[in-house]
Length: 274
Image (tube, one colour):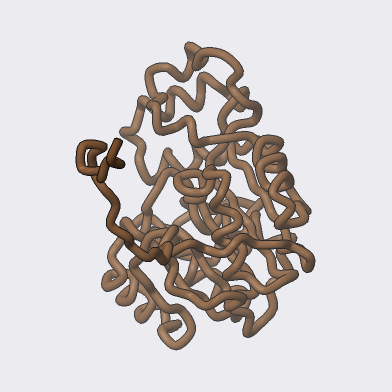
């Protein structure tokens, strides 16, 4: 038996073949491990409508269907919906997982359509905007769940990037944040009740375990994570529920105006006769 990617922390994920996981790799984390970790406290029930936002190659979407019997809309911008459709069909869940190619700020869904939203190792790339939670929450029923899990920080970097990370760190990584940052970011909007914001114990070791299998030659990242040893880097998760009394601002798609011509220059004005 192929023992790669077997981990006692993730019994649901252990059922899935490592070659299938490796072939569907779309980022720096194992999407099944993170989805399993997030959904332990998520209370998904058969028949629920779930938005898998930033699904990559839809491994998490297939996992959600097979493990929880939910209906999944697999949304991603960077990866082909056509390829995901083939993968979904091969997994035998084409009648329950629906791949869609779109941007996270242009979601083609009706208000209150979903029972839950999950975002696996994707949310920091679009969700740090102060206005985004207001946008996303309207697609979730009042009382519905929103949860994210992925790479993050154990604590915020108050000063310069530590020397152990400088060889790997890039400016776009400043979107990564700590559980306490996400908790504050979500709570201040008054849109969701934050029920969970924490980090995975020894998440940096899980990070390295995945990298050792899918990208063993990625030595810059591997050495950075090893040197950091969980001081800053690891996995974080945040979950909340849309408040029943949440007041959501309307999405402005266009501003109606009535154009009335006016003089462009002062010299075009009609001057009063002295």
